[in-house]
Image (tube, rainbow, N blue to C red; front, top):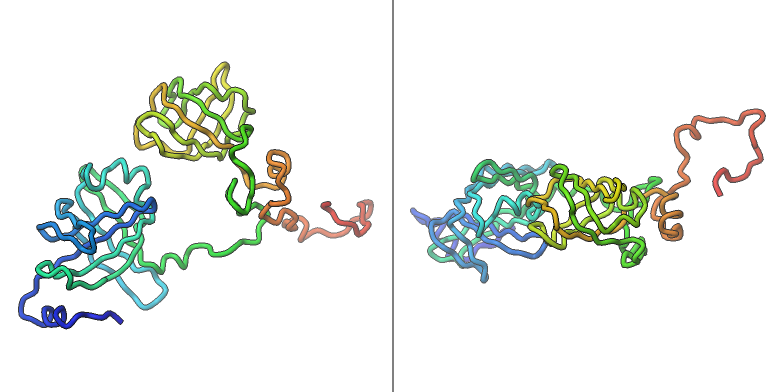
Length: 296
């Protein structure tokens, strides 16, 4: 149950109110931003709530079922507030949003209306629109582990244990020529086998995308250079001379864990799950029906 101060109760019960909405956005990287639909700057708990964004909210839908509560906010794209590049780069994906009703004449009088996560974000011209998903949407996310034949660890994490600082699993290169928005020729990594970095991670160490990371779709040798393709276009233009680092990829399969990483002791899948063929199979004359394990 929400608790209101006596002064706020009196204000709400009065004939006229001085209320506005404030949005506190906390991104995954720790950046906190504040916005308000009031026409002046507000400061709450040390956070500046800027009015210049022109942020407005749609009707909020709430229910008592397990359905996800949703609403939207939209506002103007501004380089000093929320930029198109940051949206396209995913900086606001799943950011936490706290929505307040605030008495702008006495900002200490406020109440939390809802807490949500940012879902789908779109931009059109100079405007952006963000979907706010109620916290019940997290009930749709997989929790715990799945019984499947592929590994559910991330390469190099605590459960995996592979040392990604091993020189055999990383490389550094430079863009030589851009073929399209996601494909380019690179130098400096010709010593690696084809597909070694497939599903790996590329991190830009130079250029306009410096510091951003993207998953690698494919990597193979093309004459004297290496041809690389990333899964998604970068928010900023890739140019010849841009530097990057690479980390090898993993397809989560048991043979790859054994042959590429020699890490079968830490494989976090169940590679010997019988498939449909086995489940519907039966003993046949002439087969090696000795009662021994099929996979050892």
